[in-house]
Length: 528
Image (cartoon, rainbow, N blue to C red):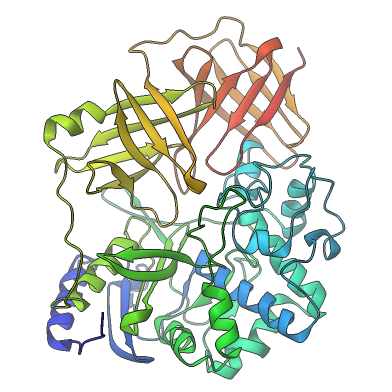
């Protein structure tokens, strides 16, 4: 497809319509930028950077961009590779000797591509009782990773998003470069590109000029988002639309790093079984109606970001908000749809399956052998949705009648298989889920004490079937247990970002196995 001229007047009307909800009195804000041929051709904002002080979001308002940081951390590592001091094929432990023997060699490239199998540190801390609103240092996070003695899977064999990997990548960059990650990014990327309002903030207590306050929806109002975790290569950047537009331009010009860096960041690789990974290096590959896209989202309490590029169209869309209930990914997709209006060759959107077929897929589904469960439901508008580990996400139709996730590179495709559902996940892996029984009994022998050495945590299950956690840094709970199927429970864990659940599998001998979205097969042995 050849790139066509943008109808900026129509685009401006569409952007203003998308921003209208944020213009309501007392609403957090949102800012949208459109980049074409490396130039910020449209930038509009609405809402408040500070509700308390009634400060509006302006052109240079900064926000925490969370996981959009990951591509910058990868860029730093790749620049060091060009310098000859680091290679993507290096063993990660060469830079972080504190890492234990995890049973397999993990490379720098594995962590850049989310194929390392290293369990996610945020999940590890949550299972030990810490919420994102609690204080947690970088040393605490490293210690949690170093307590691990196993992986989610063999490196290179699967995809699973891991903040741990990019946290460790940031440390590797610091040690290879001989300077803090923020200083390296400033020296090698931000200053050369003129990104004057972008910086790494290792702690959320650091004062940042022009930073919007993050808000979460509360009953009829908003509350200030609380977050106390240290931030690094996985999500520590603060930036703005104007600066991210300069970064989008670099993908066109290669001013920093040249074409080699641009290519390396966007280069996809294959899993060990030959399937192609949708995750490149800190970037998610996708498509919008047949138009290839690449980018990343960012999520932190009170802040959300979408950085989406359509390289063939020389187009980028940037959406940042301090409204914790907004969906910048959906907004970015609608802006891109408007920008592509009239483009020849767009793939039509497949229709939804018939309502009866959708209804047949709704309900609770389990695979007790894998220790996994999910729910499928229809929203009030009749659109199919799924919920995995408590997190809801939209499902989109495929031409063959299947439903697939709209969550970046989170691979989750559902197909009817008789009375069951076949789930296709990352690396083309398929498994069958059965409908959960209408009622499931709570095991009688659950009360007691359990310990997990890899978490440094003890759980106590009371007669009320609620879990209290005592970890290295906090006491958590009580968390409600819910029977789902024979041998499978859900443990409901409210949080400042999500109210999640962990699938708990009952193992022979009385042990429990906890499985989360990004940390799996954590065994709690019964100790009394």
